[in-house]
Every structure is written in structure tokens, then in C-alpha cells.
Image (cartoon, rainbow, N blue to C red):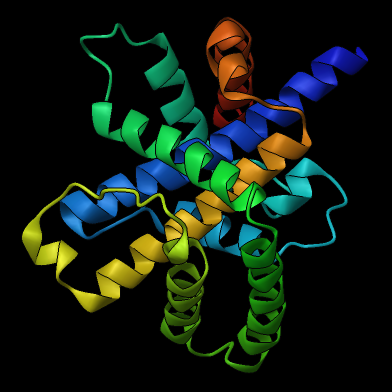
Length: 214
């Protein structure tokens, strides 16, 4: 495989990670429900600090990124009129939030410390997934939530006032920022999202085809 193609695949996976978090936030806000594998994969990516490969961030397989890959292909191939505007809103918002974090070294340092502590908590409280989610939500509020930029969530009031759902949304946002940080590490930029749109669509379709044949 050509080195540029390998890099583009890695960027596509990181981008799919952001798309997946955006889709999870959208679905939680609209319906209060999400696909379990997609949610678990995104949440687990927060705990992957020592990265061996991009696939390793998402559990060593791209199976759990199906939702994100499909969202990537659907949004980037849609005409402007048919685009999922909520999804685009969350996607761009997550990238902007990560950029704000990148420019705030103290908050970034604190976030790193909190996540390391959360890793030890996750091991200790392995039998209580909701407690883990609540902890991640608190990390989001006390770190990313203190930045000047606030991402507006659009959805049904009954879900946006439900504490458990709100915490799942915040945890999904934290996962989205994690993928956006990976996208940055791979030299991904917001301009690339549009200038290399056809490359990401091609790779996304190819990866989805591979998933559908396994």
C-alpha cells in the first residue's frame, strides 16, 4: 500500500470517529437511544492513550466505526439541501472545541490527568458502566465545559432534561474531541474535510464494503 493511501485511510478512520460521536449526540438528543457497539467503541477510544495504531484507538477493528463511516459517506455525498444539518453542526463544533482545547494548555493538561484517573476508575468500577459514563460527563463539564466555546445541542426536551441521557451526550462529546485530537495528530485539517472530500468518500465506501462482506 502506498504511504499516502495509508495516511488517508488513517485520517478517514479518525474522521469517522468524529462523525460517529456527532451521530451519537444527534441520536441521543433526538431519541434518547444509540447503537450500543458504536457508543461503546467511541467511549473506549477515550481510554486509549498509548496508541499503537489508529485501529487500536477504536478497539483494534473498524467494526465499531460502522456508524461513523456511514455518516461520513452519507454527509459528504449529500447535496447541500439534503445534508443532515444537525450532524454537520456537531461535526464542525467538535473540531472547533478540540482546536480551543489545543490552544488552552492548562485545560488540556488537566484533561489528561482526569482521563488517566478515569482509566483507573473504569477498571475499579468495571461492573458499573453508568458510573463510568457519569465520570466522563463530569470530566467534560469541568474541562471542555470551561472553554469559551459551547456546543449547542438540539433535541427533544424530555431527553435533554434527563440526567442519564445528558451524561451520555457529554461522554460522546468527549469521545468526539478525542477523535478530533487524533485527526489533528494525523495532520488533518478542516479544509481537508472539503478539499479531500472525494478521497474520504472513496475510502469510506471501501471500508464499509469490507465490513459488509465479513
